[in-house]
Amino acid sequence: MKILYINPARLQSGMDAIITGAPLSLITIAAMVPEHDAKLFDFKVDKYRENKFRSELNRYDTVAITSMTPQIYSALEIAKMAKEHGCNTIIGGYHPTLVPEFVADHDYVDFTVRGEGEHTFKEIIDYLDGNKNKISIKEIDGISFKNKEGKIIHNSERALEPNLDNFPMPRRDLLKGKLYTYLGTTTRQVETSRGCPHNCKFCCIIKMWRNSSGGSTYRTKSISRIMREVYDVDWKNDFIFFCEDNFTINVKRTNKILDTLIKSGVNSKMRFSCQSRVDTLFHNPELINKLYKANFRQVFLGIESVHQQSLDAMNKRNTTPAMVKTVVKSLRDKGISIFGGVIIGFPGETKRMVRQNIQNTIDLDLDCVQFTPITAFPGTPFYDEMKEKGRITANNYKFYDLFHPMMRTEELTSKDFLQLVAEAYAAFYLKGWLLRRAKEYLNPFGKFNWMLGSLGRLIKQGILGGLGMLYSQGITTKVISEELKNKVELMKDIDISYAKMKSIGSQKDKKIKTFSQEKLEIVSEQT
Image 1 (cartoon, helix red, strand yellow):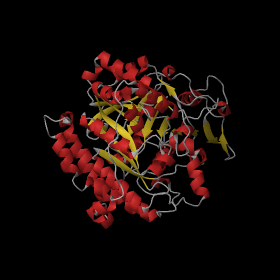
Image 2 (tube, helix red, strand yellow; image 1 turned 135 degrees about the horizontal axis):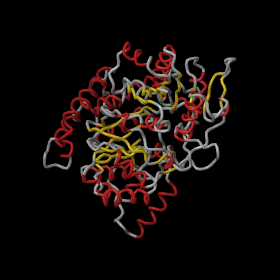
Image 3 (cartoon, helix red, strand yellow; image 1 turned 120 degrees about the horizontal axis):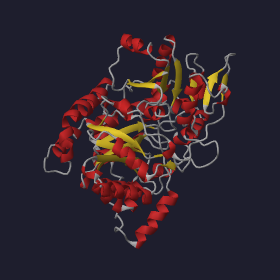
Image 4 (tube, one colour; image 1 turned 180 degrees about the vertical axis):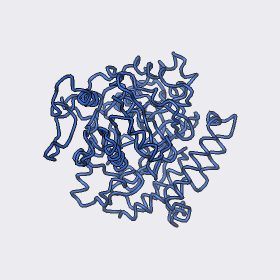
């Protein structure tokens, strides 16, 4: 059987303009059926011409499509096109898991895969390829489909694979010739864990990795497996990004990974990137030193808000704005660039509070920021709560792109959200950001001189692509409000000093480490 794996079109607004990540989910499920011919078509990086693409579909028996919520219409359009050419169609990923009935209701979608897809996908392909095991379609756990009467059937949940090491190595050969970049640097991903040990109401991860057996949804790969994947990556790229919603969630495990990278000498040949949390790095300052030693040069941090009431409400009670300021400075002092995530309009925040959050983000001087209007993804408890309160303002999933507003709060209308997101991007990126970054990145003797080799791509993709996206959305300095322009008046009641980090290795610090691990909670979104 010939299978075409498809990553749908990139989003027209938001960070897709400067970040393109390889579809790790697709090359992972492809590894489950190595006996079948495989090709990856990625709309985010491959050139698309409809006639040529349709001709390509004629050569394949099955198409497998992944989709997040804002991509779902593109995914469905592809599935419809594939069905017109006689292909079997399979769609999986976040949105099919969150709202399977929406996807399965389309006649041109044969199989909707919910949750972890590896075992489910293999059983579907075996079923289509002669069904040697003689199973009924109703026996394939983790799928939704329409029966002959047109009724949507949801099969039983798929139990999670308890040992991620049991999965075969991803088909990275399918990525050959494709350019994936992160802020101008070329990247490849290595998955190190799945799931989350917590249960936040905002989070999509819990439903994506829901376990029918009732056991833990958070699973990690072994150190040896992680290193196998590190060595399997094409080292012609600049960075390896560790795909994990919080790489430092277990400090002991993180230290083992970093120690192994350093001992192996890989850190002298490859740079690394990860996602972390402010409170973890603040209470474990030795991690910052070790991340630097292991050649981590990019870290994503959820900055979220300058207002403690919002941090508390999103289960980040252990984080304070002072800790954020301190950790950001500590990382950047070592030449580690920071990609920050900032939420616009968390419930309870007024326009003035949002603008204070924007100004604080500017003052932090992060390398890159994604400003996200508070978003309730379908299928989460937060969405159900907002829908019950009548605060969902957009049912079209294309607006669930972490750029456009899809809801309102008691304090802010959808129109307010649209204005504030535009203000945030304009004030951060169009008022001196380019000069600040150029001063740092062009200095051959500076802490960020590792960026020199990537400046060409950064200018083309990060600057021209990113600025082009902003202008295409009508975002210029003209959208910045007078209130945001008057920094002194705006920030007069916001006073953030640096917090004192604990001394490395102290007994008191060890107690804090234990506490932070037990109490750690995460707010995650589709990324």
